[in-house]
Image 1 (spheres, helix red, strand yellow):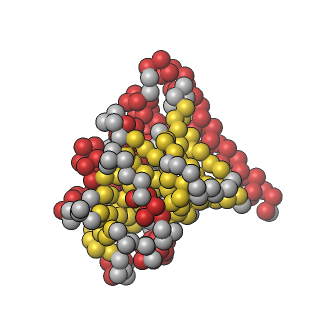
Image 2 (tube, one colour):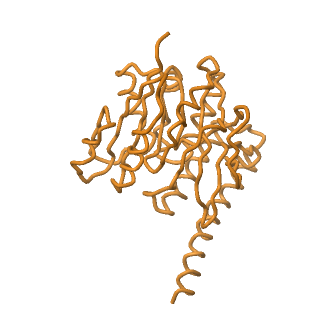
Image 3 (spheres, rainbow, N blue to C red):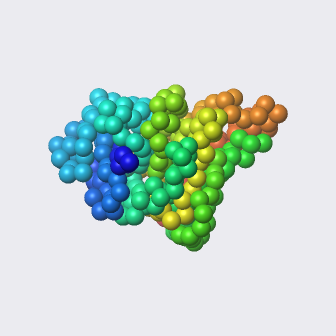
Length: 277
C-alpha cells in the first residue's frame, strides 16, 4: 500500500516571524505513517533571505505580487501534483499545529471521498473559543462557525457544510476535479465555496474532534478589505449555491449585515479612543 504523502501549502504574507512559528510547529509533527512535502508560496513583495532556508520547506515559490489566498493555494496545488502527493493540506501561516493533529485527520478516511478539518482554538477579545466547523444558514446564506467554549477531544467525526480553509485536508483527486479554489474570490469565503462545490461531487466534509490547532487570526487584511471581499464573495455564494427561494432574503440580509458589521467595528475603535484619552 502506497504511503500517504501530504502536500502542505502555506501562503506567506507580511510578518516572517508569524510564518516561521507555523513552520517550526510542523517540525514536531508525528508522522509515522506518512511523509510531508511543504510548499511555501511567498506572496510578500519584500524579500527575506531567511524564508527559503527553513529546514522543513521542500518547495519555495516566490511571487512578484500578492496573488491572494485562492490563487496562491492553487499555485501550491500544482507543485504538490508534481511531487506526487496523495493529499493536500491547506494551512494558514498564522496557525500553530499540535504534533498529532495531522495523524488524527488521517485516521479518518472515508474512501478518499471526504474533506477534513481540525478543531481550531482561537481568541475573540479576551475569550478563548474552539471552532468546530460550520453550517450555512440558507435563508440568509450566512456561513456560521460552530464555536464552543471548551475543547472536547473525543467523539466521532462531525459532518459539516464546511470547515475553515485555515486548515483543510483533502485528497489530491478532489483538488484536481475541483480545479482548486475559485480565484475570483481572492480571499474570504473561498473555503466555503470549495466545500459546497465538493458536496455537489459527493464529497463530504468532516470536523475531527481529536485534531486541534491554534489560529492567531487574520494578520494581514484591513477591516475594510475584509468587509469588501466578504460582501462581494457572499453574493457569489448566493448565486452559485443558495436555493432560489432564499435569494431575496439572502441578498437583503447581507446588504445590511456587512456594512453594519463594519460600522460596529469602527464604533468600537472610536469608543476605545475616547476612553483612552
